[in-house]
Image (cartoon, rainbow, N blue to C red; front, side, top):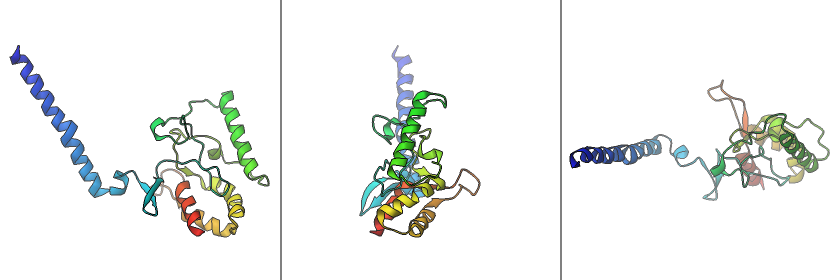
Length: 190
């Protein structure tokens, strides 16, 4: 019987060393050399302290900030441990009620704004953690942020343009604005 168990134990230990220790150490080492920022979570720093990640959205509700896409994660918004969409279909009354509430919150924050509300400001992304909004969503909020911060719209528009990322490789995806980085740039002005 020992003759049959010994090869199984040796195989188990060998595979544990290879796949559980050696491989993760090699991959971690390579990633630390090749792309250290991404390997360490793409942390965004302010005054030497991490304030978030450029890959995970954060909730902003103060009118002086640009607001992110709504988050579908629970029990709190932008909970990276609970990444998921709401899985509500387009005809689901709960989704319709949520969208109406989000539109109303945007209208309440900026009563004079009669522009159509961009869809990404009222619907959650598939992961519920999207750190970006569309340039149209930034433009929708621009006048409110400029007014509350006593800045000219042109100054804020310039910051939005500086924080707008283009299509990946020039062809994939859509232009997008990283909300956390834009809001930190706004805070740096004053």
